[in-house]
Image (cartoon, rainbow, N blue to C red):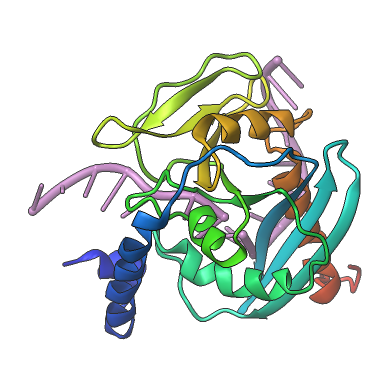
Length: 236
DNA sequence: GCGACAG
DNA sequence: ATCTTGTCGC
């Protein structure tokens, strides 16, 4: 039994699985958690929704005052299955096609998923940074890897996430009271504390920071427009 | 061998 | 992620 049997993934995926792991390992030494080099005025949020065999990627661009500047999307057939730790191989192809349609170059891109808080420090936010070459942050709703203590109960309270060598790899932030905290980790070209700072700075009255929240909202909305769903009464 | 396991 | 209505609680 190996990882391959997870979710009943079978032999034809085996070779790809090993290749993917090697790709991630080959990129790990190119992660650069350096401070941002310019001020942050415009950011982007990325999220995907699915309908049957299609994946729909949404990219929302907003400025520091939360004004929406642009919304672009792209959908295509998805072939790669969901495998914990290999999310990038399933979602990045669609995202990159949507990225081609974006006309604004944001200062930071927020992804729905983890950054370096990953077994091989290669979460989707980190992997994506090698393609777009812009600082990225991973915003996840649950843990994939690492140890952490539950943060305080007030908005803004946080605690760090550590890997098996007790090295910081991200943080858990209470972005809203009485709500489960979000997992934040730098993707690339940004520090852990900058990622924490901006994740909170872009959080308003909701659990998810605005970039990711808006992207999720539009991914659902546009999906319903492209793939209309109706009940037995014929009503949408 | 067993438990964990982003979306 | 997705299938799905109402419902309990802040």
